[in-house]
Length: 313
Image: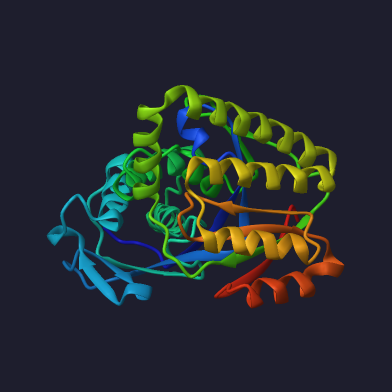
């Protein structure tokens, strides 16, 4: 089957509030990070060659016909082809990403979404966001075991999302664009490991963890209202409260606490870990005039990389 040359991208994401508790039915809010993206490009291949997928960041090339169902890139390709009801094309699907791996920014999800967008468009039948999100969720099961569904939703729709597991996602409006500094702890984060560990702790002390989950869910509701009203001072306070509860849950680390403390002391309105924790990144809500000071403080506190992003443009 012939294909057109097509290139598509997908953003990263950060969870503003609601990590872990979202797995247990409480709300969470997340926003796309449009300046850091994964890119997928499809070009025709030799007749009879089938589909080859080239992951440039990993220096890995796979043939779809020779790859099992547990490979995430092969899985999304097969899901797209099955959804469209078309045979395997003769093409090369190349993938590259700006996003750091294992950092809570949805790098694997962004690659999957970009691949689904590019492959379906190259076949002349681009899939809508709701279908891309649903297919990506199936791939997320390989990465994360029991994913909440928030990553595939916010990245596929590329809009701020208020998410409750099992309910239709709600997009919402950002009243005033705001700056986040994202800082890497330099420690790889395992979503599967962190989610599984929280599950075991919850099973052993459900009453304790349910109270924490309820509090984080209330913070997510308040954070949505703060974003919709442009109340950035209130949002910063909610970041701090959310981080404290995640620390009580056992998913923060000394290095993450060190970075959040450094950001606050340098003038950030608030700071918290983002994603599954036990490594990865923190986010700091920073007014424009404090960006340089907070970035310097984060670097001095051990951040291995920082990214400044404007949310809501």
